[in-house]
Image 1: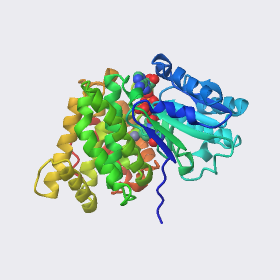
Image 2 (image 1 turned 180 degrees about the horizontal axis):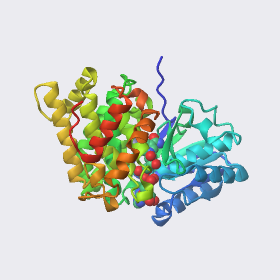
Image 3 (image 1 turned 120 degrees about the horizontal axis):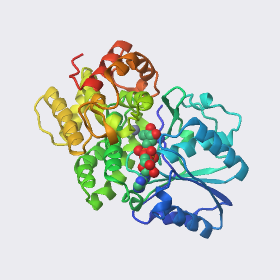
Image 4 (image 1 turned 90 degrees about the vertical axis):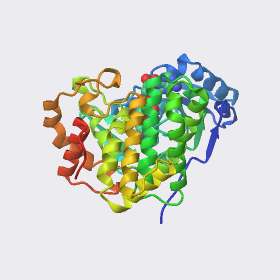
Length: 405
Ligand SMILES: NC(=O)c1ccc[n+]([C@@H]2O[C@H](COP(=O)([O-])OP(=O)(O)OC[C@H]3O[C@@H](n4cnc5c(N)ncnc54)[C@H](O)[C@@H]3O)[C@@H](O)[C@H]2O)c1
Ligand SMILES: [Zn+2]
C-alpha cells in the first residue's frame, strides 16, 4: 500500500494571500524570517487579513536561514505561552520548516529533537493548532511537503524531519510573494525545485500519482527558470507553481542522494565561511548523481524519459542521459552557479578556488559520506552506494571530475 498526502486546501494565483480572511479561529501566530516579508508589506497584509477574520494575531520573527534546533525550541516556548489555534508560516523554506518543527514541539512539549527526527514517527498533530504555509521562494515547496529541515550546528548536520503529520493543512501559493526574490535566490531555489522533480521521478517510491507532477514540473522549469532569472515576471509567477508541483511529487515519491549529500555538506564547512546553499549544492551534485545512478538500468531509462520529455534528442538511453547531464550543466552556467565545491566562492558564485580548501575537504569527506548514507533521502535513491562509492562521488562533486563508477 502506498500513501499520497497533500494539504487539504491550496489557494493559488496572484492575490491568494487574501484567503487568510476566510480562516476560522481565535489566535494565530505568524512565523517569519529575517525581514523580507515585513519589508515588502506581506506581513502587515497577512496580519490585517487574519484580524479581519476575527483572530488575535502574534508574530514570531527573526527565524534565520537554515534554522537551528535552538530556534525551534525557543519558538515552541513562545507558542506554548500564546496557545494559538492557527500557525501561519510565511517566507522561504527556512521559516516554514522551523514553524513545522515548532508545531510538533508545541503539541508535544516533552518531545526531543531526536524523537522528532524518527522518520514517519511523529505522533498525531492538530490537537492544538492547524498549520498554513505561505511560500515566498520558488523551490523548497515546503508549503505542500511532509518535510522540515533543521540544522544541528553543533554537529554541522542538517536533519530532515519527515512525516505526513507535518504536511500543512492549507498552502497559499501566491506569486506576488515570489516577485521580490533577488536573482541569486531565484537561481538557487529554482534548481532545488528541478532537483526535487528529477529525484522524485527516478525515486524507488515513484508512482502513477507522482510521475505526472514530477515530469510536468521538469518541463515547466526547463521553459521558465532561466527566463525568470533574467527578469521575466510572468515566468517568475509560473515557476512558483512549477516548484509546488515538484513538491507534491517529492513529498510522496521521496528524494535521493543529491539531497542526502546537500544535507550533509551544507553546514559541514561553515567554519570556513562556506555555507553551501541548499539549492546551489543540489545544482552542483545533480549531474554527478545522474551519472552514478544511470549505471542502474531502471534509473537510466527513467532519466532517458525525462530527456525525451524535455525534447533533448539522442537515440540511445546512454546518449539521452548524457544530453540530460549536459543540459543541467548548461542551466548552472546560465544561472551563474558553479559546477563543484572547489569553485564555490563568495556569494555562491563560481571562482577558481572557493571557500573549502582541498585538505579540509579530504579530511572530512569520509565522515560526510557516512552521514550522507544515513540521511533519510538515501533509502529511495535508485542505486544504493557503498561508503567508498559515496566518498568517490563527493570527490567528483569537489573537483568536478567525471563519475565513471
Ligand atoms: N521542507 C522541505 O521540503 C524542504 C525542501 C528543500 C529545502 N528545504 C530547506 O529549506 C531551506 C531553504 O529555503 P529557501 O531556499 O526557501 O530559502 P530561505 O528560506 O533560507 O531564505 C533565504 C533568504 O531569502 C530571503 N527571502 C525569502 N523570500 C524572499 C522574497 N520573496 N524576497 C526577498 N527575499 C526573500 C530570506 O529572508 C532569506 O534571507 C533550507 O534549510 C533547506 O534545507 C526544505
Ligand atoms: Zn531541496
